[in-house]
Amino acid sequence: MKNYGLDIWANENFVIDEGELVLNYKSKPSLLDIVEGIRSDNVRGPIILRFPHLIKKQIETLYYHFDKAIKHNQYQGGFHAVFPLKVNQFPSVVEAVTSEGAIHNYGLEAGSKAELILAMSETPQGAHITVNGFKDKEMITLGFMAAQSGHNITITIEGLGELETIIEVAQECNLKIPNVGIRVRLHSAGSGIWAKSGGMDAKFGLTSTEIIEAVALLKEANMIENLTMIHFHIGSQMSDIAPLKRALREAGNIYAELKKMGTPSLNSVNIGGGLAVEYDQHVQARSRNYSIDEFSSTVVFLLGEIMNAKKVAHPDIFTESGRFIVASHSVLITPVLELFTQDYQERLLNFKPVNPPILEELRYLAKMLNEQNCTEYLHDALDHMESLLTLFDLGYIDLQDRSNAEILVHNIIKKALYLKVDNPTNELEELQSNLQERYLINASIFQSLPDYWGLKQHFPVMPLHHLEEKPLRAASLWDITCDSDGEIGFDSEKPLFLHDVDLDNEDYFLGFFNIGAYQETLGMEHNLFTHPNEYTVEITDDSYKIIHQVESKNILNILESIGYNSDKILNKLKSELLKSEFITEKEKSDTLLKLETFIKQNGYLRTTN
Ligand SMILES: *Cc1c(COP(=O)(O)O)cnc(C)c1O
Image 1 (cartoon, protein in one colour):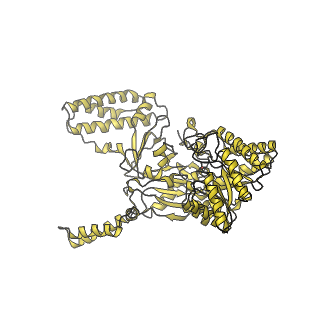
Image 2 (spheres, protein in one colour):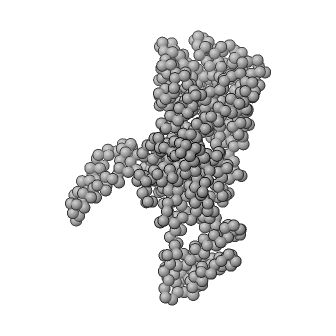
Image 3 (tube, helix red, strand yellow):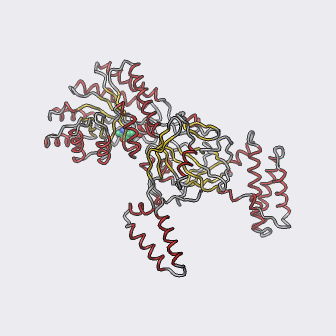
C-alpha cells in the first residue's frame, strides 16, 4: 500500500503532493500546513477539521445523479432531500447543509423533540422538514406549531396511536395541520451491520392492515387531504443494492394502491437514508457494491415502472441521506505522542570495556549488515537474541548487556527492512508484521471513533506527511484512554504501515477520514476526554480561511457538565496548596497560577511541541 488506498476511499477529495496530503480543491492547501497554523496558537491535542466544500460536493452529486436519472427515465415527479439531524447536529455542519443546499431547498429531518426544535429554527422557510421516530402529544403539537409558523413539515407516523394523537390535536386546536406521512413496515429487510430498520420484526412502521386503517381514520376525521407521503428506511450504510430494490418494489406498490384508495394529496415516496460511504483502504474489502449513479437510476426507474404499470402519477422522491452527505467533510487529526520501540535508540547503547562475546558478535553484525548479507545476518541476530535472553535468565549477563542486545537487534531488523524495501523476502514481511510498532495517539477512540469501538467499523487512516517515503513499520494505534479497548490493532488482512519518525525532532500527524457521520454525536466522554477542538476551513483560490472554531471543553467545564461545582473544586485545590508547608509564598503563587492554567485547558496531553 503506497497511497493508503486514497483511490478507494478519498473520492478525489485529497491527493498527495510532494510527500504531503493536500486538499484537491482550489489552492490545494496541505493538511499539515493547516494543522501547523492552528497549533502555532498553542493548540494541542487532537483536532477536527471541517471542510464545508465537501458537503457542497456531496449535495451536488446527489442532485446531479437524481436529476440525470429523472431526465433519462422521463420521470414526472420531482426530487427533494432532507438531512437527518441525528447524523451530525453540530452547528457548522447544519449551517453548511442548509446554506450549501439552499438552491435546492435542502431541508432537515428530526427524530426527537430536541431535533425538531433545531429543525424548526434552522430550516429555511420553503424547505421541507420531515419528522420520524416515536412521538408523544407534545412532539406532535410542536409539529403543528411548525406548520402554523409556515414550515413545510411532514410528520411520519410510526404507528396508529400517533395518528390518533394527530387527529386529537387537530380537533383540539386551530393550528395549521402538518402533512402526514406513513412509515411502512416492509417485509423485505435491509443488509449490512446497521440493518435493523426494515423487515417484519422492524422497530418502526405500519403493517398493511394498519395502513388501511390509517386511511380510514384520516377519512373519518376529514383529514385525508393531509396525507402526503409514504416513507421507509432500510438501515444505514447499505452495502448491497438488492434489498433496496425489494423495498422500492414493495413501497412503490403500497403507494400505488393507496392512490387507488382515494388519497388526493398523497404525492411523495420518501426512501430514507442508507446510501453508503466507502470506508475501506484495501481493494479486497470494499464496503458497497453500487455507485451513486446506480442507486439513483434504480430508485427512479423502479418507481416509474411501478406507477406506469398501475397507471398512477409519478410521486416526488424524497431522500434522507445523512452519512453520504457529511461523512467525508471532517477529518480527525491526531499527533503521535510516542513510538514504543523508540526507546531502542542507538545513542542509548552503553558498552563496557569488556562485553560478553555474543554481544560483540551482535555489534559486528549490526556494523557489517548490507543488502547482500542481510537475510543471513538477520537470522544470526535473531538466534543470538534468543541465546542472550537465556543467558540473562540464568544470571550470566546483566541488565546493561541485555539492554544493549535488544537495541542492537531492533536496529538490525529495522536496517534490514530498509535495505530490502523494494524486494522484501516473505520472512522479512512476516517479521515486519510480527514486530509491530505501537503508535500512541493523542486522542480517545471512545470519543472520536466510537463506531470503531462499538462495531469495529474501519475508518481510513494515514499520515499527513512523509508520503514520499515507503512506510515500513507495521502499526497498531493506541489511544490515551486507560482502557485496553482504546486500541486499533494491526490487522494483517488490512495492514497499516507507518513511518519511523524521530519524535524528538519532529511531529508526526495521522488523519482519520470520513468521520463526519455519527462519530461526533455518538462519541462518549470516557475518561472525561471531550469533543476535540474543531475548525471549519474554507478553501479559497489562493489560500484558506478558518471561518469558525469551537474549543474543546476545558477540565473545569467537563467536571461541571456532570454535576460538580467547579468553584468548589478550584477553591479546595487552592486552599490546600496555600495551607501546605515548606515552599515560599512566591512558589505558592506561581504554583497556583500554573494550576489555574492547567485546569482551564482541555484534558488531552500536551507532550508534543
Ligand atoms: C438514520 C436515518 C437516516 C439516515 O441514514 P443514513 O444511512 O445516514 O443516510 C434517514 N432516515 C431515517 C428515518 C433514519 O432513521
